Image (cartoon, rainbow over all chains, first blue to last red; front, side, top):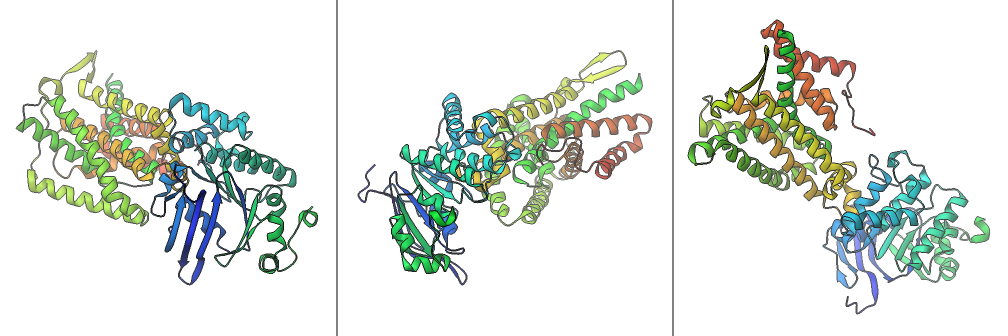
Amino acid sequence: MTDPTHHLLELRGVTKRFGKVTVATDLDLVVSAGETLGIVGPNGAGKTSLFAMISGDLHPDSGAVLFAGRDITGVSAHRRARLGLGRTYQVPRPFEKMTVFENVLVAATTGAGTRGQAAATLAGETLDRTGMYDVANRVAGSLTLLQRKRLELARALATRPRLVLLDEVAGGLTDPEVAELVTLVRSLHDTGIAVVWIEHVVHALTATVDRLACLAGGRVVADGLPADVLADPTVRELYLGQAVATDEDVA
Amino acid sequence: MGLLNAVVQGVLLGGLYALYAAGLSLMFGVMRIVNLAHGDLGVVAAYVALVLVTHTFLPVWAAVVVTVLLSAVAGYLLQRLLLQRSLSSGPLATLLVTFGLSVILQNVLQELFSADTRSLDTGTFATAAIHLGEISVSYLGLLGLGLALATIVGVQLYLSRTATGRMMRAASDDPEVATLVGADARHVYAVATSIALASVALAGMVFAMRSSFSPTIGSMSLIFAFEAVVIGGLGSLWGTLLGGLGLGLAQSIVGYYDPADSILAGHLLFLAVLALRPQGILAARGT
């Protein structure tokens, strides 16, 4: 794995337009191996489109996406998943008719490339780690929102990713539930998986991430330590049009 | 005793309908493709087997095996080269493409083989039967029913026990998410179409052994296959088996009293199910 830049993920000058709407303008972003990066920004800032371009659902009009030192701009989504890019959706999308275990097993076989007993073991371990072991045989369509969010994460983890993209995992959850998920995301960090986390619940981010980036109008307008980014006047103005919610404000 | 025999014949006939319908059901279940060329693809297989038997030294059983393998390959290519492209343009596009394919296949067959009826000669096997009192169970009928059971049980095991099978269910549920966990949806779809064509090839050849066939009979088998799928419940293979058996039984039992009403009885059962239980006998789980 030769990686001259030491970045696991790098976006270079990425631009994407839908008609007159620009979701990314000459956007640069890097993520190092094992790093946890939080992304904030107002609605329509291009956060979810950014994820889609990293995971391969969307292809940029120009610019390049590099992963582990390799240009993956033209690589299809399923190959990116096999290379170690995992993703969760804002609204969880489990395979409704399959059991929780089968959901994770598909990821373990197709994403991580394991077979037979090894795949079952990986799926079991992942369910254990995400606290979903007890409901392994339930049909995914019958799960609660928190369980669905956990399954979403479990399925991404079972592909043995080097980088996981989390899209608003805390949205719609109660504070104690958010706290549980924060613990889970921190445990990913401890196992060396890099995380890029889009979140509106800012206190969940600041409690977890190493670095924070603020997106607006398809550009990165601030990027640095969480405290510095939240104190940035541009961010304050763009993101909330008011003082950015700090831990005290939210709690 | 005559009625009992009609029931037995209905089950055997229903087995053949289920075999015809299995591939249609699978393609609809996995990709939401309604393949209007399904019946014609079975007829093409019958002609391929006929050509193999007439122009090579292959015995019939070997011609059947070769044709099934060829159909599986053709199914994979059909999906990758033709259906996959139309799939991205919505359900109407796949309907039109498969309808066009049906017209082309029927006309090419007429051009190559004329509109004359043919049959796939299996010698004494075609008429051999087990006699139990007044009931006669033909080997060909048992073959059709056996192949239908084997196909449906086999595909079910494949879907629940193998990695590709689970991928197929995942891609059926949400192709975009399946892709994001590393599944190549296009490959998985092509495997599904490959299985569908192999099974309809079997159905087409068993039909060709039972009765005479011509280039245009595919439309009729498509209708029966459709009715079996709808009666059984969309997206459920076990339902398709039950639907095929129900259709065969309705035709055979009514045909015992009045042969002229046999086909009509099948259509009426179909209409009754549509009116009273539109989701079919066994609706797909979770929907």
